[in-house]
Length: 337
Image (tube, rainbow, N blue to C red; front, side, top):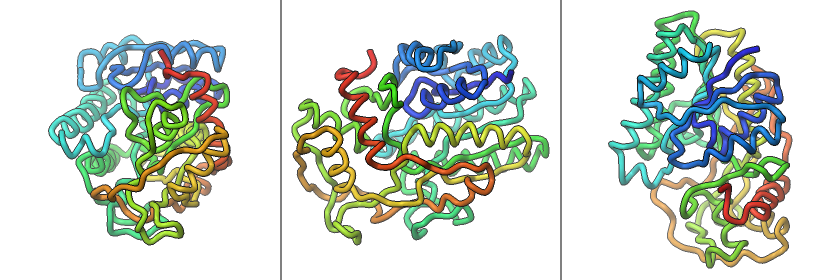
């Protein structure tokens, strides 16, 4: 049975992927510094799956701690989520973002090399398509970014490409996600940010709970059917399944692949609000404000490559995403504690 190291494994996407890995028969070792998550998530993953995970509270920038994990466990492959991820904050703190995301990845890759671990699935992002490509995005489009967070993804993808050129037995899959929302059907794990959420759906959830007064909608003058930004929202459980598919693919394939994980359809901010209102049975007060710098009209995936390469496609609908998100919110009114 293979041992998979999941960096950032107690985070939103990481936790759902750990559950999916355990259900698929893998052993899971989690490494997380808990900067934006809680250790209690491990207990919940175990409750969902009936299987145990091994947890290390450690930072990927810490070479000695990373070595310890590899020396104590025979790691067969890595799924790498750990990193700072708030777009706005990255503009305010570029040094912290470049230092954490890129240095941390380099430390991880260095330790992987020392322990002869040659398979990695990397948590990339649709943000690498920048401002100049037109949706639907395909993996062969040129990459760029509009903020430091996005550039860390572009740079790490390039690092992985270069390693695959230097070592023909190395395999890396960079999964470019679109907009993950939803929660596990059990309601035990979901999006659980510290402080005021940066992402749309947890923000809507806090408005639905009455914790926040209203939802701010950034701009209603985009070139879209209702004027609000259109994004490709994908259920986090579909996304987690995509990681297991990518891992299985990497077991038998070397070299670098960038692969979109999205539904191939876009939904506007107002459509998401409407689906959430249906799920929670109440109106979400909202206020239209100015556009945010760097936001684009429309972003959605061409998801054919994932289907062709490793037989994955998104199955769950926007209604499923909002129902599962609201279920998690109801069951965990103060988040995971």
